[in-house]
Length: 246
Image 1 (tube, helix red, strand yellow):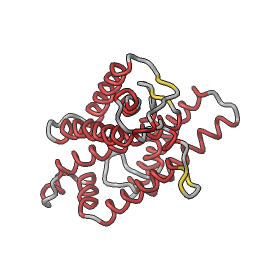
Image 2: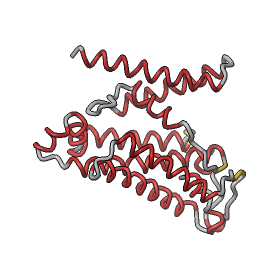
Image 3: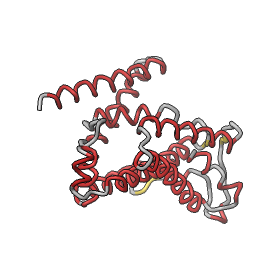
Image 4: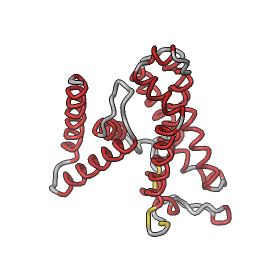
């Protein structure tokens, strides 16, 4: 959905930076919908996020008529020269995409470890009822987390489209599985209350190295999905065993 929105920049005649803001706002809106469904309407998180995911994919298909837009261009007079500035440019020799990742990781780590909101988040995930009794605004915390997640997903969509120099309604399909794998491998508990940014980054690197290694040795892409699923199950099993021993 982020990619489908971003590809409309040349057609609308708007500069890229404006469409980036709109795309992030759209991601925040989708996250807010998830948060309200889960926190206030008590819809199970898995059902709510899965349902909204399919709605978003449907909207992306409607926006593009199912087409993938390649070789996206722009209008230099608007500061819009396509996706190259994000997908291929470097700053101090570091790719822009890596810098975006580093900045987001640092901000999130500071929020989790140095702010009251971070403590509220861990408390809400660990024991929601106890957190409510302690005065933590659990519902608002949940909605805020899903909004932040939506913004991060939108940014990821922008970076992905920039690297591919194309925008398609199916971009990022199966990435939700990869994200879950990275988080679980990083030591986060699917039940909530445990997890770190450092661990998630490590999990993402492990998944990346695993995928690249399978490609290098010539393993089919279908088997890569099987391996990813197996890694998720194994990581959850090990976490459960470790947690039960405490």
